[in-house]
Image (cartoon, helix red, strand yellow):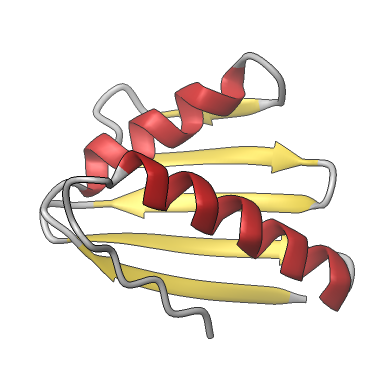
Length: 93
């Protein structure tokens, strides 16, 4: 199962860096030095991110709907916390 979201924001690279760094102490995670790409391997699935100057793209992969739902909640909660200065719109497909 997978889900994708494309989030318009000029701070995409900042959020990608914060997200990956936040989880890097607890989970397998890596990112490019310029914060253009990153991924975090959760127990519920994999979160892959790409960022440019205008948007943050996210792909989630999980074994089933239940785990995909948990992964979406984790990503939503953390990104919204990191983006407290702006109102992110996260729409999963």
